[in-house]
Length: 450
Image (tube, rainbow, N blue to C red; front, side, top):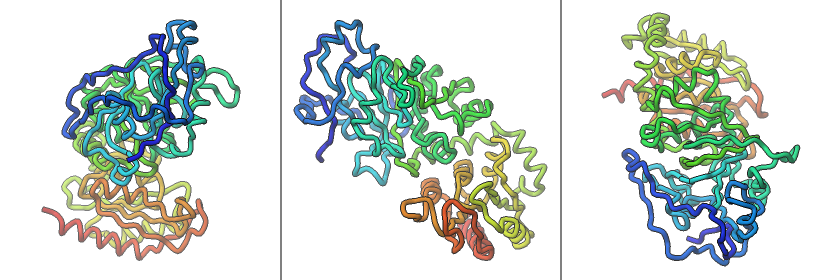
């Protein structure tokens, strides 16, 4: 397979700029097998004419003095796929079999960990680089940033210049950093389904190093302040684990930068999703015991399983115009054996985790709230109500939540409505079709019980 690079010119290296000679110090990473290839005898990118970054664009920290910088005559390769890293920087990429992105292997999206020393990370694309290489992770819009644009971001002395003010940005210096921030990670869906599951690839590293910090967008996973504590306990990654809020307008320097491979846009990695789901669902009754007890007290019969829980999500935008009719119809149709609960999205994190953990069927219009199926147990089901016009290319239906449900092994149905001809607008749902679908799913779940 041909490998494309923005590559290096021949070098005369007089400086002591770091040449990465890493040995992976954490050992075996859980069940998935880690593969590290031997270093090749020749680097295939040599002699390829393509954009490159020179010494003037490297951060001052790469050089012990200005004299060394002036003598530095090396340009850096830009790597965009893990296959490129395996070929040209095998010591910097540690493959983990089982974490490949199933739909993108042909494009080089191999599961594993990118490991850099004395490295910087910056911009909403989380571009990572040191004195040896530049790495552009996958994720939404990753293909939209050209090599030329990458180079324009890497400006001396701190590695990034604000495109508005053209002033150097602040640098935050850290020791060991695990990056899970990904493009659009400030949005709830992207944070929960694309970013958070990447921790599954580094659970052994987190266990071995209690001081390693997690670099994540703050809006969705870190505020209010109870969330890091809650996620730490649910994931067994140390009660005092520090989460650092990722800011597009800062530069982060890490003595050791660890990047679990990112996913393609709108698609969480299946094994990672399942591992994180299993951790959360197993620990919810322990970590959120008091919240769970209050939930059972509020909804009698649910503790013993005598009554099945159906969650109906209500959105504040792109909502169902006849939401109340749907809620009443579900409560009437399944009054004998189900408790139908309305989820507003304003509940505390503790409460909405417990609600979805206890739900048998989750019903709601297409939107970020459906990402909470990550907290549901494996024997749950999803009914997604989608408007006629979606937010995918050319108004097509967006199947991101269906993809998540399949990855988690959940029963799932999507009901595309005749209403909602412009996006993003509210729309009406065919109530009886939802009733019939929920009834069919409940029957399917009952018959599949061991």
